[in-house]
Image 1 (cartoon, one colour):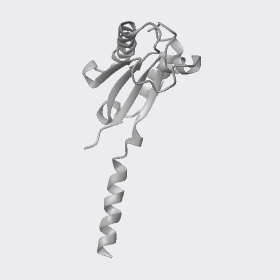
Image 2 (cartoon, one colour):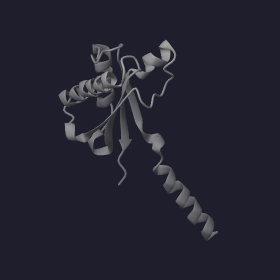
Image 3 (cartoon, one colour):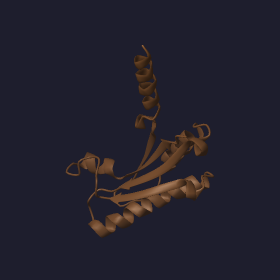
Image 4 (cartoon, helix red, strand yellow):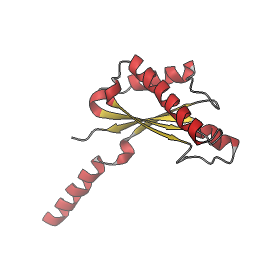
Length: 135
């Protein structure tokens, strides 16, 4: 019986560290744009406001993507401009810049297919990902 109890406690402990606890919100952009529309800006701010003790409980990551139109150099620049726009929105909302990690993928590592209009439009985004801090 003692072995079974140890296994149950161990398995229960592992579930606490599940990566499924991350929270994600995406900001979508028009082709070639890095402007955040007012609706998405409000939605992001309201979402962040709804999370109690945000800065104490989560690491904040911005992951930027583009479609492949325009070539590598252009899309690397565009990806950086998009993540910078979201970072500026966060800092205007009293989130310190040093609490945010940024990764700009450009058109590399797409999540959606880039051979359809829908897939390309879904790849024009910055994902705001909140990873729970584990102590």
